[in-house]
Length: 148
Image (cartoon, rainbow, N blue to C red):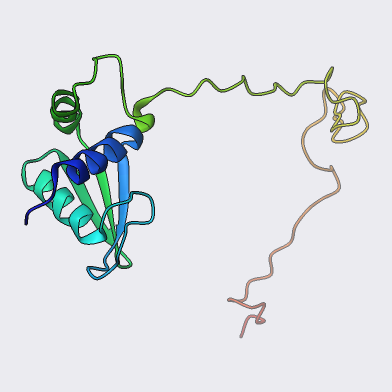
């Protein structure tokens, strides 16, 4: 299918910028919702890049999901004349703040076990009470009495 050069470049720029592209399987849609290009041209351009191995395609619930590969990044850098330091948004590392560490100093009203009130053990004693002596009187299952 013939796709004008400016439309092909717009599709390539959108794909390289985000690293992913989503297109609804609607061949009669006038325009793609994110790119000002007919939806059919977006699908066919991505189909071409998929056949060359530059894009991985996933289809689910009437939507095409296109993910750029490493070979696709190299190809689009050359096609769009971009420098090596420019990468798609999905390949950028996001600096996240360190997770808060929970400790006793930060949580004064939290769970405390240092007061010794709960689950305290007497040192030197065994687990369980001394007067606990279970008695088994035969029988099988569900407490049925033994037949004689």
